[in-house]
Image 1 (cartoon, rainbow, N blue to C red):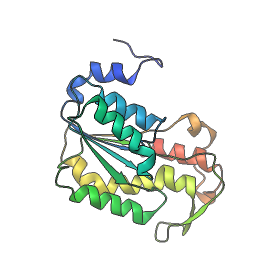
Image 2: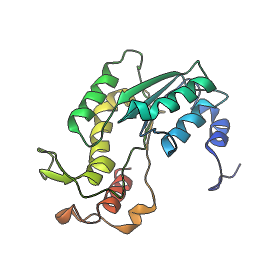
Image 3: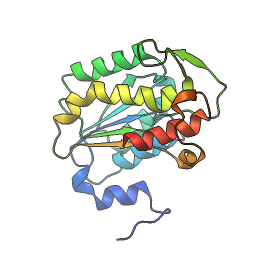
Length: 200
């Protein structure tokens, strides 16, 4: 089968059932009406469903409809919510610890780093100890926070090796800018998306 821009998530999970069946997926940024929700719903709709879907996001209330939809599609899937705010080192570290210490989650087969922000006002964040003390919020949420979170949960991803996967969702926004390390506040959304591609 050939895949195009009009191919759906449901078509993909049907075609690749063996890569979904019984696995554990972690999706960041799974709020309703976004890519994260569509990904979770497609996985839940698989004829060979995953065993666990972990939804990591800033607001459980914004994700509750996604959790309900997954349970309605397939009540056998274990759905776990983890609070994760990628602008906060404390939140990232707490979320990672929660996942690492959860005995129900012995491995993560697929990590889908989907969470991100764009077109928001300039917001400096204090990330003391990570290079520059002050970093711009889009760069932190779209790249630095993702990098930290991914590295903190790597032990659970490695347990699923050799078939484990990490998927970093980006967009065509990376075309707007390279990375200007000497002025990290410049064109920050494009920079953060370029960084995501480099991280891959």
